[in-house]
Image 1 (tube, rainbow, N blue to C red):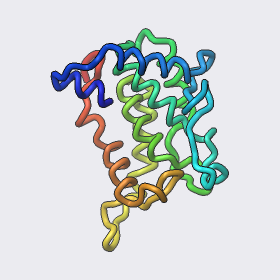
Image 2 (cartoon, rainbow, N blue to C red; image 1 turned 90 degrees about the horizontal axis):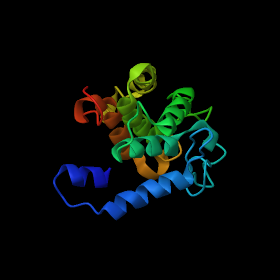
Image 3 (cartoon, rainbow, N blue to C red; image 1 turned 135 degrees about the vertical axis):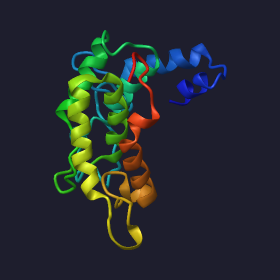
Image 4 (cartoon, rainbow, N blue to C red; image 1 turned 180 degrees about the vertical axis):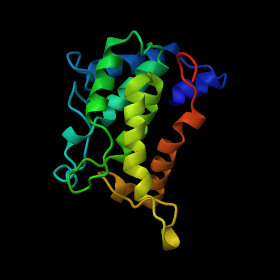
Length: 186
């Protein structure tokens, strides 16, 4: 995102940096089904030792979402890219659901998934967007000093706190106002 934003702002961006990003995404993405890993092919998201059991990595496709979005920002057309299609299908099978007890709550994933699925568009985006709204709108605090915020939850809520959680949930809800589609119109 930093490289794309810099380029859009008119800054010189090294083609080597873009090629390196693309090479890394290829290295960590399982070509058979499109799942991206953190440090190795298809391994899924990273978790701290303390949160691994409570928020199992198989309940999130956060790095797949990052890889799909990065591919689009690097110039792959969602309508033509097999890896974007495969990644988007994984995201659709792991829609946002606020279920802390079941381990499926991952705000980082929801943010990148929202950005990626918005760029992919179509029926998948509609299903994703409906799930995001259902998962997060009713969880916004409506009481007391925390009114308007979201409680720190999920695998990174403790580390990020209320500001982190509120920032990610707010950015999920404003993606269509803030980001144009890379390919095609809104």
